[in-house]
Length: 222
Image (cartoon, rainbow, N blue to C red):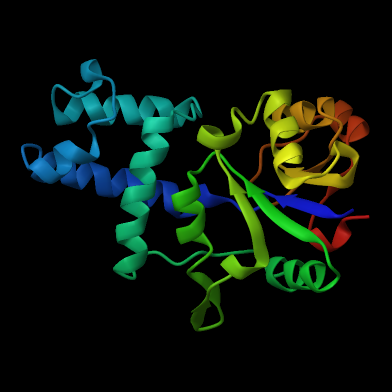
């Protein structure tokens, strides 16, 4: 394995609720503020006649797990403020930091492909909780990809594009995910796809466990 493409941390545990709560407060308290209107300018016009309609649209996208680019861009901006203000710190499972460091030391190239924007990814890995302080893990990663760069995470072409960008054949790349549809798309591109069964993830069907290797932590990766 020369490349590990990691998407095994659950952003939504703290980042997504923060963005929704922050947007709700801004919308209800400062709807006519030019700064807020600039933030939501990328949303379809019919979704932003007032705060209630906008928030209902965001909640609908979140409930249906729709990765709308304009929502991801807004979340990234709200997260940036949260990290800079100290309201957000990235929590990772205990095995993640030491395993990523060991892979990096062993000469493996690490990259991120996430539905979160590249901007959000950079923020996410800049303020990682490490005991009572935080660490910047960005130096561990060679590249970051999001749907605006690579395409949908549910499409084979996106993984082929990433492999080409990284100068690697699909068989040389390992992709970790908790989403079976993403795993299928990566596998179709010839990538070695692994399902991550973490606490809080959606349950995996037995047939999916038989179709893909499954790990509970990064140290389980064969």
